[in-house]
Structures are given as structure tokens and as C-alpha cells.
Amino acid sequence: MVGTRKGAFFYSSDATRRKWKVDGPHSLGQIVHHLVLDPRDGRTLLMAARTGHLGPTVFRSTNWGKSWQEAKQPPAFKKAPEGQTGRAVDHVFWLTPGHPSQPGVWYAGTSPQGLFRSEDGGVTWNGVAGFNEHPMLPKWSGGPGDGTPDGPKLHSILVDPRDPAHMYLGMSSGGVFETLDACASWRPLNKGLVADFLPEKDAEYGHDPHCMALHPLRPDRLYQENHCGVYRLDRPGEVWQRIGLNLPKKIGDIGFPIVLHPRDPDTVWVFPMDGTTVWPRTSPGGRPAVYCSRDAGKTWKRQDQGLPREHAWFTVKRQAFAADDGDPAGLYFGATSGEIWMSDNEGRSWRFIASHLPHIYSVVTARTTSCKS
Image (cartoon, rainbow, N blue to C red; front, side, top):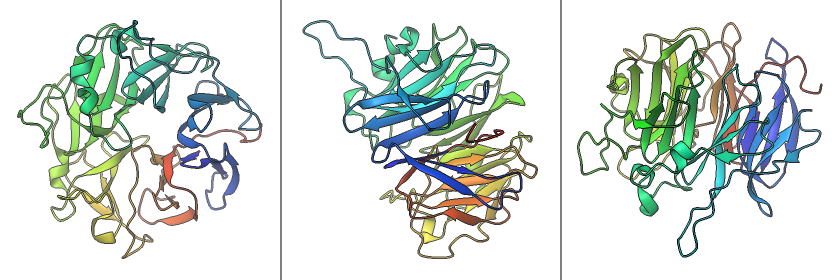
């Protein structure tokens, strides 16, 4: 499921993953930030879109895009009291299904940073008061001067598979935050993170996580790709370890996405980009590569067989790299140049399955009996 700057596309294959069929575009011309299939029912598909006429909203389909219904009540901040300046949702950026024990529950993250919840499969959305109305949120989120490109964002909403009351989220900017009581209260979880752009060393908040992932088979292990490095946290620990320093120095450890192996919590993939002084946000030296660690970040191996060897100045956004649950696991990333690259052997070799798409925002995988049922 591919979200782009000009609509959404579905690519489907059988278990061999050799031949692919395309369905789309859906919502042509609209910015699609995220497409997610509900793993609990295998048929509810939500799409976070920013439309030209409806503005920021969420669409819902239960027939793989044959028809879409806009949310009756999209994510929106509470109206400010008269005489005060309120916040308005610029776009819905991230979608996460709720805990398996809570069918119909979804979470959405927005720009500017807001957390929203639906209890009816995405039809209506309400703000999570414990977060959106937290007295520290203006300070946590950096205030109105946040300079994040395309706007500040709340992303990486992670639900502990053992406990629906335990969640993590990331804010760009702001940092990582945790709740233990079903979103009623939150606390920063940023010890050990570097923030070169902040005047305060070891700041409690104000960090810029790009993407964060929790491994479902080891829920106490989190990985993070940050504006200032790649990190791992093993709970109940409180201090993130910068495992990206083990990447080659000439490549660096700056990027946007981070992807976990479906069965091995020690295996992780990143797609580094040029994060030097001018921050061009391109593949380092115009030579794109995925880097894989099989030992939780102690060592890394370059995986670039089949990728362009030179003059390929693209990068991969935080939602545009994903793994499937095949054996061996398949990997897929969407480039800002409009190509979808895949590996059916866990990164040892790559080939592209689509080209000439609009700027790609997200790539998400799902296993289903039929994309047309």
C-alpha cells in the first residue's frame, strides 16, 4: 500500500513475490500520508489524506478502495475559547490500529502535534485529552517556532501488545513519550539521545525522533532513527544507546525510516541519508544503500546489490520502508524519486517493481487472501 503526493496505489503479488499487479491511483491528486490495513479484521483500510477541497481528513474502505467514505468526524483540535488562538490540524500524518483486544480502536497523529482516537473503525475521531491538553505540551512540542520541514508531526504511535494501556509515541520535534495509564498521563523518555541543535545537553525534551519501532516478539525493545543518530532502548532501562555510531563514519547514522525483522528482534534495517552540514537529504554521495544489523546494532552490513551505483540522489521518508512476514522476509522502500524497490531475500539483492510514481510518502505491507474481496 503506497501513499504518494498525488494519490494512493496498491501493489499485490502471490507468495513468490515475483510478479506484481497495480491498482490505482486512488484519490488522484491528493496527498496521502499513510495507508494502513487493520490486522484485526483484514478488511478495514484507513487512509490519511490532505485533500484540496476537504482539507486534512481520514478515508475508510472495506473493499480495497472500490469505494471510500470520509470520516464523519475527522481529527480536529478543540475550538479555542473566544479571544484565544487555537490550533488547527494541517494534516493527518500517522495511523495505528489499537490493541487486538480493542476492535475498532485506532490512533492518529497529526501536524501540528496532536493525538486522536477512534473507537468505531475510523468513522469518528476525538482528541486524546490527556495528551492534547497536557499543560506541558506547548513546551514539549517546541511551540509555534518549530522549523520541521512540512510541519511538526506526531508519529510512531506504538501500542504494547501485552497491555493496551501502555503506549509510546514520537514527536518531531519534541521527543519520545510514554503512557502507562491509557493516555491519561505522559512522560518524556529521552535520556541518552543527542540533540546537537539544542543549547541544553541531555535535554529532557525537544528532541527530533524521525521514526520509532517496537518489536512485537520482544515488546521491551525499541529502536529509533533520530535526527541525531540510530538508537536502541531495552526496557526497563531508561537510557537510549546510540547503536548508529557503529555504522561507517563516511556514511553516518542519519536517516528517516527504521525497519525490524518480523521474527528476529536483533535484526534491523536503516536507510542512511546525507545529514552533513547543509542537510541535502539525499543518498550519501548519490550511492543509495540499506544497512542491516543482525546483532541489535553492534555491527552493520551494507546491502546495495541491484541499487544504482552512482548519481541516484533520492532518499526514503520515515513511513516509506517496510518488511513483510515472508520467509525470508521481504523488504520494500519507496524513494522520493518515485520508485518502489524490493528485496525478497532480506536485503541481499534489490530490484524495482514500480517507477515514475509521484513523490512517495509511505509504503506499508499487509498479508491478505485477496486485495479484491
